[in-house]
Image 1 (cartoon, rainbow over the protein chains, first blue to last red):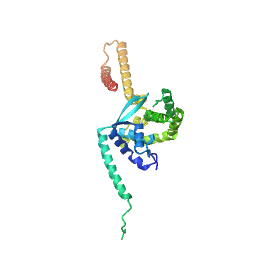
Image 2: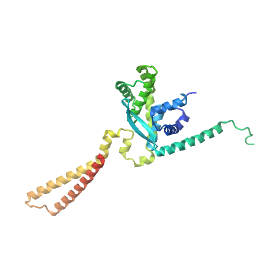
Image 3: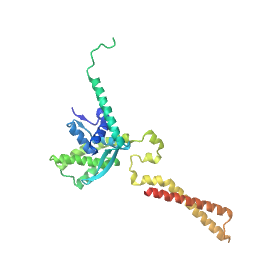
Length: 119
Length: 170
């Protein structure tokens, strides 16, 4: 199964969590690095497109969860993102909320116990 | 890994401008696509082929979708909208540092200052001519009062203006 970003409602909803989690682990990353990290870890099954990634990054920056630094690399400007203290807290919170959500989803997706309903 | 030359980067940049990438995103998109091209080239693909694939990924439609998603994500909240001036709304998503935004913001102040200064100069001239024509060394009471009031107002404004310029410069 190949899950593309664009049009994938599950991925769209969890993009913030993914970005925050990646930055919590690695400290400082630029956009392309994040897409590569996601691709490598999921063995190419999850692809973040730039169209989905950058709006989320800029939104998180606007909300004060990320800060950016621009550096010149190979003749072009590279923008690095890192977490603010508030961003680190949000990262922890979002990840645990999402883990809980996954547990609940697994419960929901298991085949229901065979009991007679409504009797 | 071979890095792209400045000429190749320029080609990429021109493409992004052509497909209508917004100012806030062009720099990052350029770096993103350049990284992508360099990685593909590292696997032995020629620049032309790698570039073609990257440009196809970043075609007009993709960039337009990005711009729309971006504006939806970053758009001002209702609360911000209520506090925003018309300038803020007009210049949202536009290139503020270009200069027009600052000029517009300074305009009311410039207008007031210039109006006041021209009034002061006018009255000074008139009172001077008045005193000169009537051979009186001092202008009459009414003139004197309006002159000093305007002079004081003028000095007050100049002080504010200087302070403002200082804060702008910092």
